[in-house]
Every structure is written in structure tokens, then in C-alpha cells.
Length: 426
Image 1: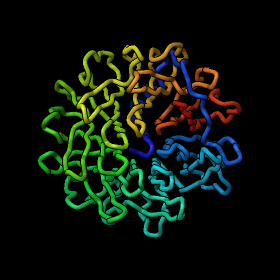
Image 2: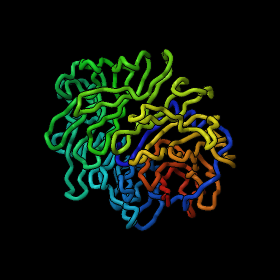
Image 3: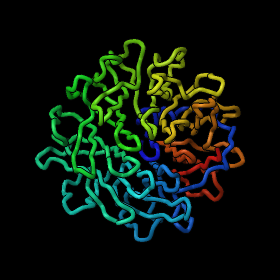
Image 4: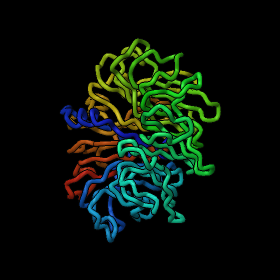
């Protein structure tokens, strides 16, 4: 869980969504979007803002922005990390960039990010590292430590995630021997315990052997015990007889690995990716272009799915309320902390009535009732005039997304991608 849930689209899916010209959205029960990528005085950003990440309590939102006017003294000309307080309206720059990813702890106190900037004195590699910034103490802590003799490619660190209490940080690294037993020479998901200072690998097979493939894109349960990630390695012989990327979860306490995405036939090229996990580690959401995860999936498009670990069941999320399958690509799934709702981006035109804008929109599916809501519309229901892009983030009562639309809020004249939030009343 990237507290709250934040999930990013792959480059291929972004291209597919942006390039799909199909009809778009209408039905909504939310009060309409609020623009979060603004200065404390409400001034709109003069550069693009992306990668929103909500705190679990829904009060704070972090994002990456190239804007130079969100805070005073921002003269570095690169994408920095900002945190906006949705209650007070205050915007704070918490780290210099160039930054590529960000996540928040449950209360928004701790910010983890990936940046090439040297934020601590011991960082002299000039490459992406993972940092944690404590907004209460104003202390910056370097989480990733690359091998000093490794070539530049093998010192990259990216895709940070953090547990609700801020104790556990997960990220992907190409650094050799980043954790004890790291002998596979691949990109690995590393879990760092800030209390003990220890690093731990997660891509172990059920027999205890270390996987020999790349593992990516970690997501953490609230306590940091459960780690969801993706890999093309075959880690669970009970379910994985494919040669493609699948989503797994590692129970760090029990030392077990379980496959979450479960094709029912042999898969060679299709993949499952972009996992998001509920606070208690029971529910998972992910994207997949595999056509055999659920019966009747014949739309030949990437869909969003949810897996109930307790009941061992998979459902397709990116469908209309009546079960009609999407007629366009859906991805960027993020799960609410209680596991009830899933936010995602879709180019489909048939998920809600009145979707005629021909653009990728943001939707929220209620897994309990089956209701689908399009949230990337103005308060009066006006459809977005430009697509939603990148990632979504979802707390129990708020959704965040990025969009280049100019008509979701009044006074949006900056002609660039902004970060928006939508509050939920139920």
C-alpha cells in the first residue's frame, strides 16, 4: 500500500490510453474535483504536476511538479516533490529533484521519494536514490545505498512505497548485494526496516530459493508485513506455469510467497502488473492483459482486476455496473485502504452512461455494490476536455489523479497537467 494507494501506468498503457479516441464520462455523485497542485495562495502551477500520492487519512497529497511558482525560491528548473495540505491549503516543497516517484505514510508525516539530487552528504553517486523526509522533524534520511564499485546502471533505485506507520520502506533497486543473499544480479524489490536498519529481499520461491528474474513495483500493507510486487520469475508452482509477469505477495512474517494473478491457461506474452494492496493485506488490485483470469474476458484489452486473498477469488473491476466488459484499455489501479473501492484510468466509453468525450477518464468501482462512478468530471457533470494521465491514488474517502483537462475546475488556464482530488461522501 503506497499510503494511500498509488499506482502508475506502464509507458505502453499510457500511450494506448492517450491515443485512444473513444467516447467518455458522465454519472457522478461526488462534489467535483479540487485542484491540489497549487501554491498556498491558490496560484496555479506554471509547469506540469504528476504522480499524486494521498496519505491514508486523505488530508495530505504529495506529487511531483516542474512548476517554479508553488513555493518561493524554487529556481532549480527541475521536477521537485511537494506536499499539499488539503485542509489548510498549504503547499510545501519537501525535496529537490529531478524526482520520479513519491509516497506518503498513513498520517502524511513521512515522505519517501526517488530523486537524483544529493539530499544527504553521503550521496555522491549522481543517480536515483530513495530518501525519506520527516515533515515533523525536517530530517532527511537516505534509504538506498548503492555499491560504490558498481557501474552506474547497477546503482539505480526507484518506485518507493511506505507502510502506514512509516517504519517499512520498499523500493526497487539494480544495486548488487543490496540485501543479504542478493546474488541474482537482477532488479530486486528491497524492504528496509527503519527501526532495525536491515534490508530484506522478497522474491523468494515457495521452497525458499531466491528468484532469478527482475522484481518491480512494490506495494505494502499497513503494517509492512505483506509486500505485493510483480515479476516474470516463477515463484509459486501451485499457480505459476506461465512465462510472463505476474503479481505476487510475500508474507515477511511467515516467509511465504503466493501468486495473486492466476491465469487458467498457459501464458507466454501477456502480463499482470501494477499491484495495490489493502491495509490488512487481504485485497489486491492490479492490471492485466491476460484473458484467462476470469470467465468471459474476450475484449482483447488490458483490464483491472481485484483478488480476495481470503476467499481466493478474482473479479474483473473494469466493467460497467451491469457487468458489460470495457471496450477500451483500463489500467493504473489503486485500492482503498479498506479494500472496498478501486480507482483506475480507462479509455472505455461504456462503463457509465453519457461517456462521449473520447478520452481516458478516471473511474471508481465499488466492489461491494458493483457501482461505477466517473470522477474526472466537473462538479456539474461536464466531461473533461483532455485525458487523465499517469497514476491514481485512493484513500477511503478521497481520489487523486493527474489530468491535462482545462475544464474540471474554474480558472484553469495554465494549459498543463495538474493534480486533482475528489472527495467522497459515502
